[in-house]
Image 1: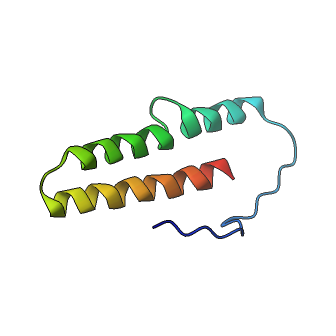
Image 2: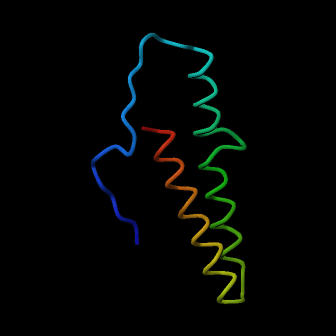
Length: 74
């Protein structure tokens, strides 16, 4: 189960555009080593796991990675 709250976790004030930082955020968001890729890896590992305890742990980690994706994306 996922719980969505419409409030942002952190307040951000942007003084001026920073293309270099924007590129880093994009890589962290959707790149090969980013949060979305990490969540997908953990979900895939969980689906292949036969041990219920390890499967549950991997699902928990994947869900946590999705929360990181939300932080980076907002």
